[in-house]
Image 1 (spheres, rainbow, N blue to C red):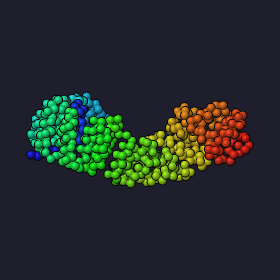
Image 2: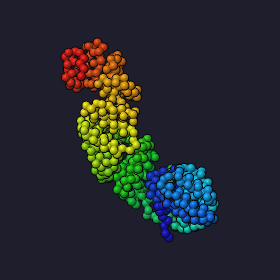
Image 3: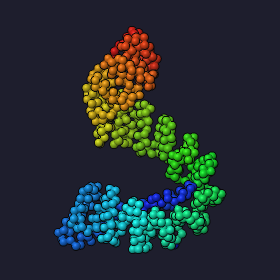
Length: 610
């Protein structure tokens, strides 16, 4: 007797939405794994665009049979144009044209179907439902209409009505196993457990004993409170194939869900006797021991599962994410997480994903350099992943390792010539390395590929202005700063730098004060921004207020910054506090200030403008 198989890609099967969560919880990872492998066909398979068009074409000629020749030609032209507009993604145009089709022929089921499919895609399920119900009443033999309506019924939680549609389709095609399966799933979603089980039995008559069907039926028995029958269903599978270890895992999970830990453990151990290399059973045992708060035993079993060569990497990574995202339940701490990551690396040394997992762990612990090393290792096996490259570049920037950022971003520009962010970060490195001409070239290249991204455009222009400022092209630079802030007025770094440059040149100090004030209003505890605002006030000879903001800057992280310490000394001098001023100038030297002007201030005990 042939085995029943999952539907092929493109065939319609409705999802088991909500079915499992309404059933009593069957604990244990071996059941989860078995469901991943053997019940994947219950995922939703939507009616495809090609199927929609096929259905429309199949019925279009029938719907027009009663029209006169002129009207039929008009209908055919409009209907074809509607399909064209729909395929081009012009949904509103298609809707208007299809509405015109229905004005010509109010009984065109094909036009109704096309309209319904557009409304369904736009999540207007009420309109789609009404149109499909009418289309089916006009053309009851069209399976595509019925499949789409069943799909919409499912989305609107009308599971029993959807099952009824499949029941009609089964009457027309009683040997279609996918229809029978879909009906069973929908009845389960509707909590019609007995009816669903009976439908599965009909399918089983055609396929013979089938583990996927038995697993579904067992779950339904549990949901219906018929635990003895659930056990018998799994025992039937074991009797049919006593050498299949995973069936004992199902039995163990069922015992465990019923609080029978002895029989559960016996069956888990039986799996190990039958298949000592089984990796999945270790995850089930880990869950078993965790249930009884035997944390160490649980973790030892988890490690064995992670080390198993019989468990695929994707399953391990999914489990890893489950464990670390729910630490309270899994009892996984940072040390254990690191141990699992090391096991993954040891057993899958050539898989880039394990290094991205390691990088994420290290970056969460703020170990930026180590996290970057892990990402660079990932690139050895997957050099074309832009997200990894982008993350590396941002880490370079955060570490302020400008030569490294330059080297990495230069390589990334060759690999990803159409990614503007790479050009932006390369230009940042160029600015810091005083490669001002190269900065301008890179920014112009980045602007050439930039499409509809005002914030990024504003950053590009601000950086180009920085390069021009460093080349003493002051007026050109300030024009770009103004244009940048018109595009992106919330560029706080740009606002701060522009205000500072204006203060250094004693130009437009009122404008500088407005810009810098906007920045510290947004970031009142940022020492760099506070220093800029204080310095603008200093240039405006508002020394008392300048001291307040400079004192605030020092208290918020500027106590070892030689520029801020020197600025505070300058302000104190203007307030006739000469001794205090000299004291802060000396502190600036102690913290790395090396300018000759600073030395003169100390020697001559007076403010000297740069």
